[in-house]
Length: 219
Image 1 (cartoon, rainbow, N blue to C red):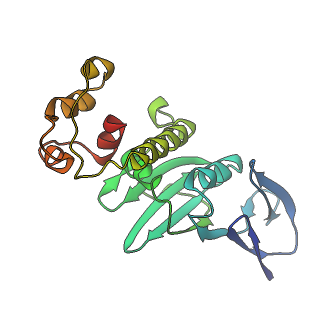
Image 2 (cartoon, rainbow, N blue to C red):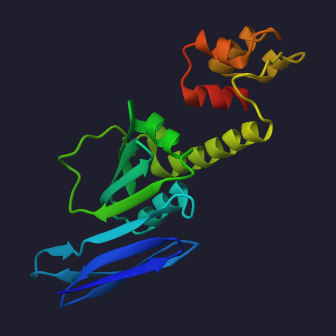
């Protein structure tokens, strides 16, 4: 067998080559990756082991997830940002598990969308049946396409707050009729706590909101 490594759009592709090949293309709007697989016998097919590695500053997580979704791949993403590590499991292109520090499931996945730096690797595996599952794509709220869209919107909300330079030291006051414009419970809870005197960090310390609820409520 021969080994081959190549680079496409900010990440490396590594796979072990064998003697008999059937080509397939995994593509999206940014790049096309040509991958290959081999037949071991007439009844079973085992795909070659494909690995993707790169930097999140060059290839965003939504694009990576869309890439493996288009290819209906099964495998594991490992992400590293400083001392923080995270894992995402994919089955036939759908997200079935995510964990990042103490977070699991959709909360962990959405938090990872905010990782704009760090490194990633993806390795294709035969099955994830023996692994933990925290996301169930058959549920409408946890469908992979929906989670990717929600994650992209979440990143836009965080970017909006960064542009406004909202920080823990910001002192906020609700504008007139603001409570009627916000419909979710966490937003109403947050707005009710603003008094124009306390910094945002002190307000948030008294509330039991997740990071996602804080960002979405503020945005």
